[in-house]
Every structure is written in structure tokens, then in C-alpha cells.
Amino acid sequence: MSTVVIEPRWVAIGIAIVLGIAAAAVGIRAYRRRARRRALLQRLERIAVQAVHQVEVPDGMGGFIHVDHLLLTPQGILLLDTRRVPGLIFGGDQMSEWTVMARNRRYTFENPQPALYDRVASVKALVGNVPVEGRLMFSNVGKFTKGKPKWVMMEGGLEVEFLAVDRSADPISDAEGYREGWDRLTAQLRPSPHAFTSM
Image: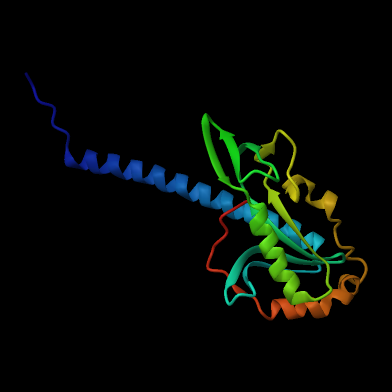
């Protein structure tokens, strides 16, 4: 009975190939995530006079609360909480948890509406009479099969609900009445330690 001896150099080559494939897969995922992020920011800039992303807002109780996106628009200030949730999503206004069915996997996550209300309230406390709206924007990789809960929108509906700013006119003058509140808000923001984890 003979014994097969594998030379160490072939073992090293095999390990290098496996590591190379794994590194390439990680690199491709990171590239796609950055590309999605850039595309999202470009879309948000189209509907905003000014925008800030991934910031923390004072919560009125001595702490700070994370906000994904704050946009100054001709209609006031828009706060967006963005989510990338692949699969079929089942959620409702009165449900404490929402359920996701994806690739033979079922899981739940906490109803994000109360957190959105807290974020909107924190922003409203800083901007005075400026209108503030909040939305939970889910990427198009997910689908609400039983209807969307309140304040939920899909990424594809962004420009339907919020029109692009007319850049041929003076876009700043469109929101000039909200400028003082916006400046007061942005002066109190700080960068969030949370990186882009969604969309």
C-alpha cells in the first residue's frame, strides 16, 4: 500500500488560492455596498437643498440619538431611517415585532416606528416651527406583501413622494424660510460612530 505525499508547496498554493477567493468575495461585497451607498446619496441630494448623513442629534435628555439622513427640502426637514431587509416583510403599526421571510429563513426585528418618532421629536425640539417629517425607507430588495405600515416607503418611491429640487432656479431660496431652523439643528449635530449599516 503506497502513501500519497503532498508536497508542502502545493499545500501552500492551495491555501493561497482559497484565501485569494475569500478576499475577492469580501472585496466584491464591499465594492457593491459602497456603490449602493453612493447611489443612495446621489438620489438624496437630488431632493434636498442641503443634507447631512450619519449624525447624532441631541435627544433632549442629555444624550444623543443616531440619525441616518437629514435633508433640508423645500417642504421642510426630512429625516430618513434607511433599512436593507431582503425578503418578504410583515409589519404593522400595532405590532411590536416585524417578521421577515427570506431564503428559507424566518426572523423578526423590533418595530422601527417608535424609534423614528423619537428621532423626529428630537429634531422638532431643535428647529422650532420648521415642518419635520420622518420616513422609514426600505431598499427594494424587500417587499411588504400585506401593505406598508405608516411612515414606511420603499426606495423606489423616493422621488414620487419627494420631488427633486429645481436646480435651474435658486434651490436655496426654495427653503429659505427654514434656513434658520436648519442652521440651528446642524450646529448641534455631531458625527455618528455608527457606519453605514443599511441600504
